[in-house]
Image (cartoon, helix red, strand yellow):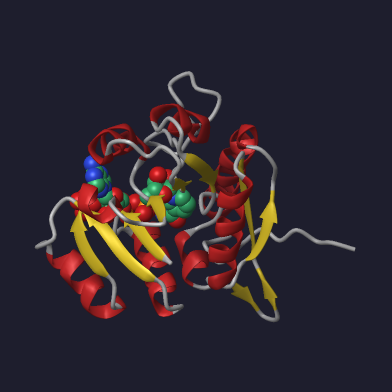
Length: 208
Ligand SMILES: NC(=O)c1ccc[n+]([C@@H]2O[C@H](COP(=O)([O-])OP(=O)(O)OC[C@H]3O[C@@H](n4cnc5c(N)ncnc54)[C@H](OP(=O)(O)O)[C@@H]3O)[C@@H](O)[C@H]2O)c1
């Protein structure tokens, strides 16, 4: 599958590396292809890098892995995503991590859908730390990856790509559940930093 990952930071880097090593065709969408960090990740992962609009053109899946404040501009840069699968991994965090600020929208995921009309938006890879995206294994268990969206085919793709990284994918329902996943991210941050549990923690849905 051809995957355009916008951002080569903690999240974009972990996802892109993981999917490239699972055999996917990964292209990072970046502002500066000559930046040393970008060249390094391209060399190490076997992925490629291109300008944001170029990376998105022809990709089966577009992955937003930038700070929340950059998302609207990125979506304006890439243009029409009607009918395209778009993963929103962002969290609209206040700068001091004290909470979420969507600027009045119900959730960042729904705001992304409003900014990208017709895109098949899936909220995913926002509710755990990037270290878990690089390695979701906890002994014999794997961390859950909750996702939500309104398009069944896009959600199927999301589940497959989460499983390719080693996650246990969990369908959390329609895109209106994005607010829950964004608050789940806040809980993870609270536990990791305020409660000092550290980043090697992950949520797991138990079933019986
Ligand atoms: N860190 C985590 O554990 C974690 C977990 C779950 C979700 N998230 C969410 O995931 C998103 C990314 O977080 P991160 O920790 O990966 O951030 P990060 O390490 O700071 O990386 C951000 C990336 O976005 C790129 N970027 C910024 N503005 C851009 C623009 N206008 N156009 C194109 N690329 C742009 C940056 O590229 P440049 O090098 O050009 O600046 C960088 O590659 C955030 O919304 C965050 O809330 C983070």
